[in-house]
Length: 183
Image 1: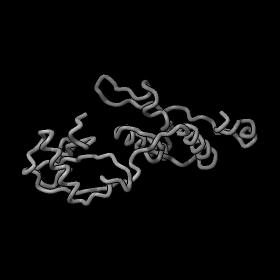
Image 2: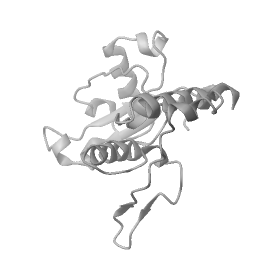
Image 3: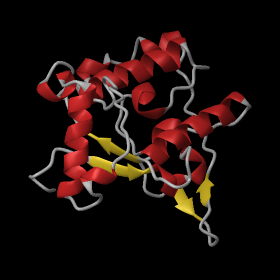
């Protein structure tokens, strides 16, 4: 980490796909800054944020400040789940409720599952959720929680195993299970 800059992550969209760049003579960099709604960074004007990013690219020697043609600011509130001392219990309650009351609902990604996953895992849960809607039986909660769940075959392609979904307890059984806060 470089204490001279505030940027947390830099992405080169052209490296993902040249189709993500409207003019192929240029590249597009995404600079990600972590902040909270209402703090100084969040409240800065778009022009101020673009100036910060331009300066930090120069500080990191990734681009000359003068070479930056334009910038756009996107503020994404609540982009990352916040973990606290009761996080696991609260997510467990949500999962229990959804399994009991909305067992056909597919939740995916960071905000859908209330857990931090890298982008690949977040997208994988979305793809697997779509497959579940079409009759699959993938346990989305196991993505990024079990090192052996997602592996590569000899060609480097991802191998995803379908798994048995846990049986949803009947209402009579639920009375015997202590509330999540007591577990």
